[in-house]
Image (cartoon, rainbow, N blue to C red; front, top):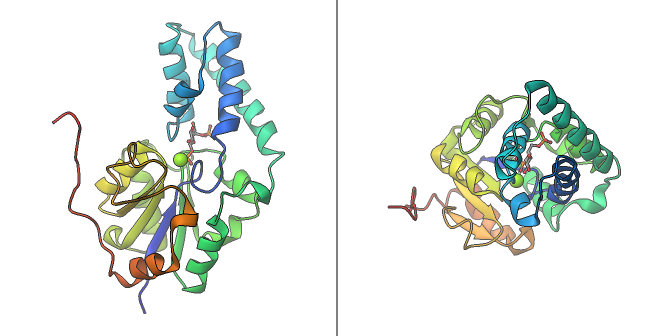
Length: 232
Ligand code: B16
Ligand code: MG
């Protein structure tokens, strides 16, 4: 029997929590006199909470004491959690549940690989927690994407070799992390942004069961186009 490890990112792949991060970061940034746009929010996708606040302070040319920094991070997270609390399964992105159910029916190994420290409560709110054999999130990693740590831990928990794993990611850093881990990277989003991914789809409605079958059987492999950089 063919068995592969399928590792899903959370924000931007399973649910769109970026809109809630945006509301919470915007209020926080504005409260310290810093502007915050949707374009800047895009640059925080896949980025850890600490690094996100560091970037906002850099953009606003502000510095904070460690105590103030921690306090603001706490305020941001409390507001973010108040939005999460309102979530239900209607917020699962199109055809994600269908894809998960297909893979479960085919007895594939499924893990979550997210930078978020709130991954488990979010999966609970949208009723998807039980679909995952392993959860690796911001509480488990010491090195953020594009470091491959999050996905390598996921593969280990699933007892799968990295080369037998497939990652679904919406962020450039996450695609790079999957590539460095030697996993098949599937970008969910725009081709112009995620061009380093092995395969790119706008969303899960574009991913056919034939494509998933071919990933499982090994008929679809990693592309030989890795580490392309616009700088070299
Ligand atoms: P938290 P992902 C990431 O989730 C988000 O894309 C990113 O915007 C956020 O800062 C990060 O999680 C940390 O989230 O504040 O909940 O720990 O895309 O890796 O699932
Ligand atoms: Mg993401």
